[in-house]
Length: 148
Image 1 (tube, rainbow, N blue to C red):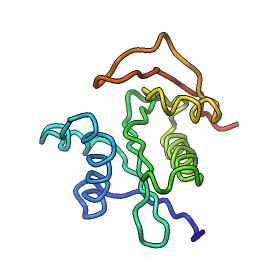
Image 2: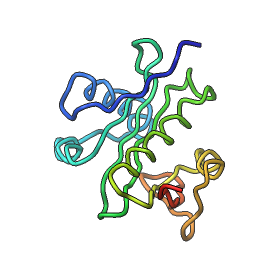
Image 3: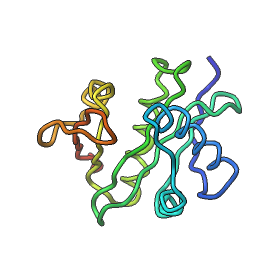
């Protein structure tokens, strides 16, 4: 397999637009959801990571500051034909590194039920009870990410 490259991309860039399309196609559209102009404008306060194999976009994740110590990871997607190849794990690990470099000590997220096992394998723990968000089961999760 070609080496995986993960890059931070700028909101509003051509690369950002490609990640929005990936998120729309695989996360939003199957649920009958669409991005609003307000949601995309709010993305400007987040950091965006994109995963590439060669020059092909295969995944992305968004991280958003919640407070001085906490980042929220959201909208993690790996193209279905590239799942199971370590792309999701690499994106999560890079997101944690970016958060640490921003002096954050905790990452929080709302995991879809289908992704809970991945997050648990990477050290995330359940917070509270499962709930329904955007019409599907989710679990709030968190992880301490301070430098060792």
